[in-house]
Length: 203
Image (tube, rainbow, N blue to C red; front, side, top):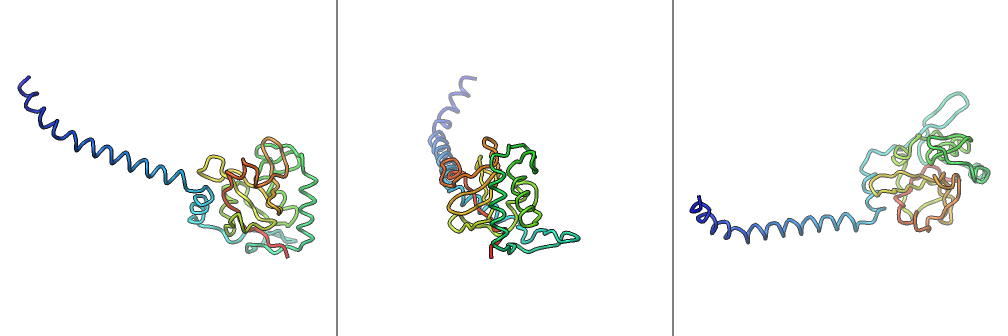
């Protein structure tokens, strides 16, 4: 038994440098891949991820008798946009309510759905994940009033949405503050901004 062990020892010793080199190379590769994932800016990752998915180029708009298809972005008059701003101002301070989409309380996507329905008669999907696939993607530098803005708190998928109102500000239903106005420059939102989408075009 001891002779067998002694006869195998030189071979094992000879293979050890190759095994060590292989493990070091593998570890280096894993670290490199991990570094690539972590250093890629969040907006780049999110835009790439969501632009590869099948995006919808239309939604539904309310007509006198029924819903009708309308292509995105939907053209709306300035007076309707100003009315939207007035509605947002009137709703400031409304409480946050998970799953809420009415005056009893709003969550983020419920607030967006309510605003677009009451201001423009546009019917939007209910969840932020569905909203994120609607309309063309807009980068942060090209945001226009009325665009939707999306955020990723965990860095994997979008999980928060608001309405861009210009000058780096957006309206949303925050879980801590309810309906409120925030700035994209605030550190929390600055580091979690994913992308925007074009839903309306103000004429």
